[in-house]
Image 1: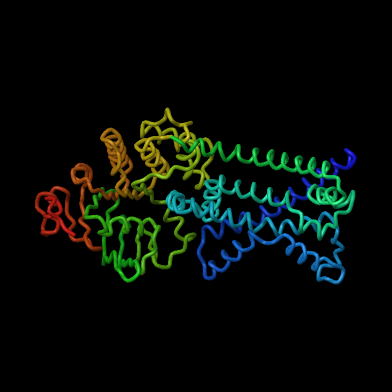
Image 2 (image 1 turned 45 degrees about the horizontal axis):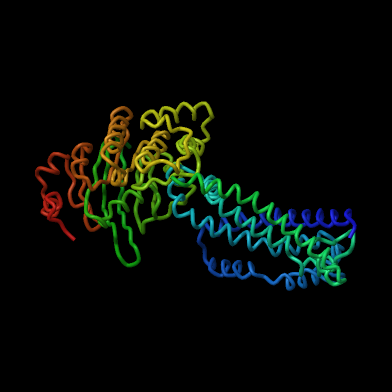
Length: 219
Length: 246
């Protein structure tokens, strides 16, 4: 691959992953917060579904999104199949349950301690939710790191709905598959190392915040 | 109008009734000590008054406002909640500075920055912790954290202060500061104070009226001197003398 192609692939990977995780955060963090804070009839089933979806097989997600977006599918008229948008949709489906599930666990861990304190201090329901989320932010950031790791290293779904089209939907993981299939193991390994480095950088950035909080909690 | 009154209160955990009171009245500006064995229902009473637990039935009359505790929603209870302050035995500090912890209740009430600064400073002065204002609250000792929790509650100027064994795990130095502060607040602002304590000398030192709670009932209530010197019921006499009770 030419250097310019490599940058293009890296840039698209980052774009697709970041947008997917951002959308997943918008949906998953409030959902997880509400599930962590409130009890309701049927909550156990919802929680079981979320935990199940945290381990969704990417290929299955790819097939379902493919069928939805294919020409004769219910969303076929949008013409999204084999576009970066289709890849984002598939990844949002994969990362949202992770963000919701890990946010719920983080909020539940803090809820017991801080709910009463915040309520006693006169917090409104919305202020309460914001306070608990702030207290649980270390756990929530861990969820974001896990979701980002899942999205950037995902290959099955993006291959199916993106099609690995050069200069259009080729991302790092699908490029690695292509290079390996054509016998270009060196390029495949190099891209793999870049992927690893990006994952490391992103997680280091997030963990720095988490560790800072842990340090501040110590006596 | 000038009272806190709880009527027809029943709290159950499963099939067990942990609190059953026909009527209990606390006059505005009074300092009430609540004593009794563990599991008697003292904390439950304070938690129900502070709207932290929902009873099976019960009405709360708080300085002129009356609500049904069993059906009261979070949002509708909020104005009442903001008239009360609650300090638990173990303080939970938020992951923020001491200043931000104390300011939290004022921020919930949307007070402006200048007011918050002045009030927080005053509250920290009162508990003698102004020098720790910028410190992370999680790094405080237990005694300091409890004093911050008291400042955090008092800064909102509650009409009713509920204290659930607040000095149970404090050393004598911190206890003396804590007691001095609540006495000052009671004297200067006429705050109504309900304080649960297992420390009988502390109840004698601070409270004007004492209540003895056992098996979910208020067994005896009297002025502090009469309460300790001339208990009417044998349960209280046994409790005071240390012979009590299971």
